[in-house]
Image (cartoon, rainbow, N blue to C red; front, side, top):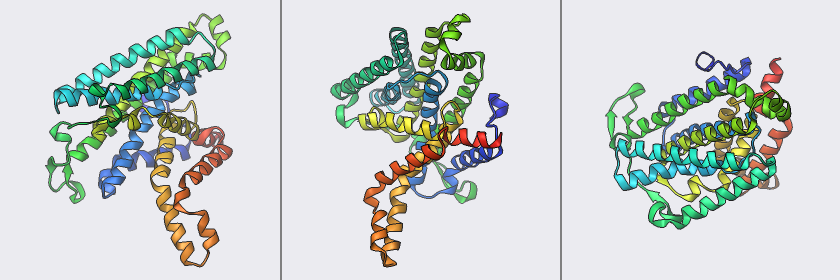
Length: 353
């Protein structure tokens, strides 16, 4: 990462953690069996890019936006509508991605130019209103988006589970269309993440950090604050749209619940805080931690509940009732914020100094 981005993780423990995380994601089709682990790995990849794009706004530019899921949804719906209307071809994916990027860029430009001149809280309210309006619009235009039911569509043949590339691939594992779809997601996220790292380490990224720390001094030095913040908003929107497009290709379904729900925005905020704002690497750690907890915490609690119940400790077992997994997820978040106030990446970097 240091060679390609110029932004090293800084810290042996953090570097090891990132290498292990990325290594497991890279080899996920060959390490894990079954559909669920691969779905979880793909979701971590998509959300790592989505959270990193939001960290560009919140962590580097100091912009609080609640419209990030809107751009994520535009990317998803762009690919979904194109594949549904034009058929399962690579050209349809290209048209969908291009249309989503253009629409996301224009909307982000409009929001930035007309709203970033106001105070932070008012800008956040504007983005929340725009995102809510877009969610209602997507739900109402059922002839285009499928409404509340969303759209199910076919992807190119090479990305379908029935496609067989190698019957007996590495480690004797079959390489099929699902494997190819996963590596399309993984490699695309890797390239886009490295591009984000280059952006934040460029002179533009340095100016964003200066504006975040002291906008008045930055303006006095001649930097155009609105221009830089608007550019950051547009860049964040474009990367979020790319994450949405990859999510649509992987899921082969797009609906309001999977791409535009406000709960996704809350998840993004939690991942940014857990990983560490203004680090980008925190997006990988935060996404992995949160998605794994979201998918496996209930299972682990169910196993603990049964074990403690069998050991004759019903009162203790009741604390680990799997129906209370959301409560424990909240407890884990509170503990992570308490012990890692600067995020996991921030804490690890501080320990290495």
